[in-house]
Amino acid sequence: MLRFAICLSLTFLLIGCAEPIADLDKPNVASNDSVPEAATSEVPTEGAPADSKPPMQEKPPAEPAPAPKPKKGLIHQTTDEVVDAKEWLQKQSIEARDGKIEGVDPFSQAASGYFTLAAKASTLGLQQAVQHHRALNDKYPTYDEFMKMMRDHRIEFAKLRWYEIYGYNEDTGKILVLVDTVAKEEGP
Image (cartoon, rainbow, N blue to C red):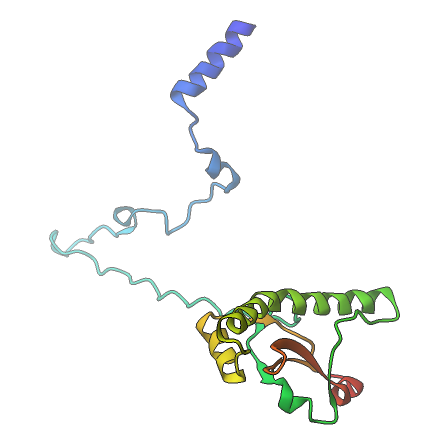
């Protein structure tokens, strides 16, 4: 019995399988695309010269792939919209978020935690670049310099909820999350 198993495995090793393993998952259905052109061409009919070839049937043009549908949720989406925090904080309905997780039930706390932590994590790299700029130039970058840094390095932050926006304060060098309290109260 052992000799038979060894002979069988050596046979498969030397000869191989009839079908590749990757093709075993696919059904064995013949389609018109896999048939060679010579097999699909028509035989000349009587009265037609033997040299003439039948007219080739043109395949219809392939339809372009449909455009991907935009995502409905905010998770895994990014934004490069950052406003000047000094200007926006002068408005009455705008306040800076302190970075605490809010919510009264586990679901709202989880959602708040996601947006709070995603905002912190996505701004860490650029926040460090701002600190490097201050160390080299003895001042924080201006809002325009900050936006140029973002564009030059193609940096985007995690997208926030509809009533939140990122802001940069050039006096403190901080990237803040600004909350529009009026929009938050009104809802989406």
